[in-house]
Amino acid sequence: MIRALAAILALSLLTAPIAVAAPSLDPADMPAGTWALEKSHASLVARVRHLGLSDYTLRFNSFDASYSYDPKAPEASRVEATVEAASLDTGTVAFNGKFAEEFLAATANPTIRFVSTAITRTDAGRGTMTGDLTLRGVTRPVTLDVTFNGSASMMGKDRAGFSARGVIKRSEFGSDYLLRPPLALVGDEVEIVLELEFLRK
Image (cartoon, rainbow, N blue to C red; front, side, top):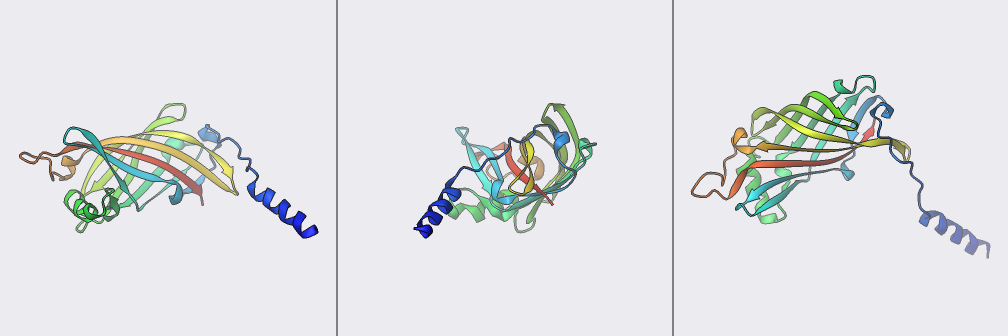
């Protein structure tokens, strides 16, 4: 009888909802330190126009990012990110390697890099981040619109979340596969969409 009651109690504890405090949307509440990407809760996708008919969505399965943060000087934060070009996921296994090579020159340039150079706050919880993007061996400045989704201490760790979006022209990085006539099948503009969670080290 005692064992049965203990089992019921244990089951109820495991299935009970976990109370989680709402994240603070004030950047001043995010603790200072170095923050590392929580990869199991992060996504990086790219969208490009296909045949002028749809925004074909691609995903990168292997990437990393970190940033340094001081709540007294948030604009001084430095963000660094890397993406494995060969981790391109088109949704069709047979296309992944070919497209990573043709669009990204993945063998010659296996790593895509981003390093922030300026952060500007435009509104409460929103801003822009400009940085140097190196793709296919070409480095150019790009700007992302960033939303701070909040920070909180949850499950024993300090956590923070961001959403970011931006648009680049792939031709500016030397990627013209299926861009020029007579096979102008894939557009030039690429929308980048990021959903990111970080943990403080």
